[in-house]
Amino acid sequence: MHKGIVFAAGAAVVAACLVTVALRRGDGAESVSPVPPSVAAAPAPPAAAAPITVVPITVVPVAAARDPQARDRQLELPDGTFVPTLNGATGALSLGKCWGARPWSPIERIERSDLGIDWYVHADGTRTTTEMKWRDDLRRLDAMTRIAVPQGEPPPLEPRR
Amino acid sequence: MNIHHFLLLLGLPATSLIAQGNNPFVFFPQDPERQTITSASYVRRPDWNLQAEGFQELAASWFRGIGDETGTCMVRGFFHWAADENIATAETYGIILRSADPTGVIDPLVSGEILRVSGLTTPTAPGGPRGSFVMNDFFATPVAVPCTQSWFMGIDFPANPAWPTTDGHSLWSADIAGVSPATFGENPRAGSPRANWAVRPIGTFFANGWSNILGVRVDGPTLHVGGLDPTNSRQGLGLPSTQANIALGGLFPDVSGLPRADGLNLRIQDNVATQGLAFVAGSLVFGPIPVPFPGLSGQFHLDLSLTSILGFGTLSGGALDFPLFTPGAISPAFVGISLCFQAAVVDPLTGGAAFTNAQATFL
Image (cartoon, rainbow over all chains, first blue to last red; front, side):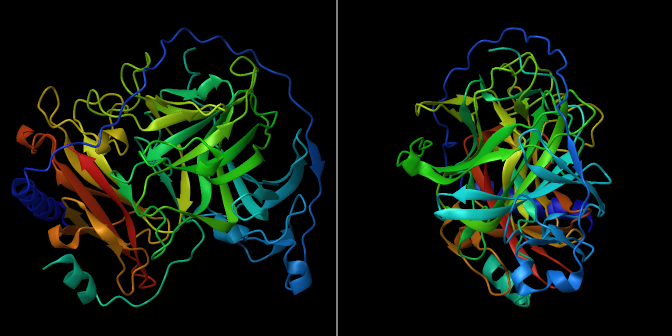
């Protein structure tokens, strides 16, 4: 696609629109609350690390995972294999449907966080899990498939307000 | 040729894309999936270390059809960049979507909750103490949101006295100039409306002058209007000239000439048709009702009688920056005018096609 042509065509049509309607006014502005003044942020000392539980994983044979009775408690992976869902989840979306375009990274182990949630740990550092969470809109528990990708050092802390 | 004839002539087959929340709809100056984030000012919480919900406003005058699955707008998950002051310990948060009250402002009451999922936690990891995770939370059952009315998407933060000194969860944030000393951040015109809100447990709420990396996961491709300000150093230096501010800078550009003369482009993003062909349309207003088209998922949200085809382009790596106006090309005489845009993305591999959301820009 030639961007010059796109630009020329797009600009011409939008410019024509602008000329045609020059009467339309108002930008949808809404009232704005004042923002409190800032002060300097406090330095952040390092905190002690919490223990992490490492658990070996169980790979479920494909045939067993396709048993309808067992399927609800299995998590299908992008490579077509299955592992058990974590944290008692049933009916979680396939990890293959949620993983996205990143190259698949195999599961290496399970870690239990200090809050008692089990996570699969992948070779590239990604953490994945399944959980049941209450949904008021559904009036029942519903499964979630969750993916956490390490992103490295964040920006600085906000100045104290 | 009007948009109706054009789309019918495409002769698209009635195929649909896989419905699993393929794309995050995020309102932040840069694309967090494909661009290096250089516009983040700080990590922030909506109300310091107090309990509060932090929201991005999705006003009906700004956006239409986010998550449109041909008549029903569905949210299939949530996306945010979670900063943690100590990644050796897990943090707790909730996902919350709210509707607007009859006056268009956020409804802070229980009756205003579209969705609340509480008790989610971040994982733990070595290498801290500080760190971040890109959190992707997918629902087995999607939740319906308004297609043509205002709503709000956000995160519920519990109070955390350990934050910011030793631990705690916060969001990557881009501040509007003057809100903080940050030299990187948002870039709307001076005095523009704010679009980020905090709701306290007692139901009071206030606007914050920043944008966060957070948003809902939807099936279809997304569209954002980008503001091109060649004098903008708040997004980092040495960036491509086509890299626009696709948040407040696109929603509220400065074309006044006093001091800026922003250009405009559109950024179309899709994790499904990553090499897709995007057809772009513009109008002066959103349509009175959304219109479905055979063979396309989603609906057309612009006013058909005022719509023009602006052109087409090919996505590369899941994104297309579609040029509209170079900086200086929009006359200051058009200050106060609004324009609305929407695109349809055709996947050459499957023949599937889907509308993006629609977005307005306010000159």
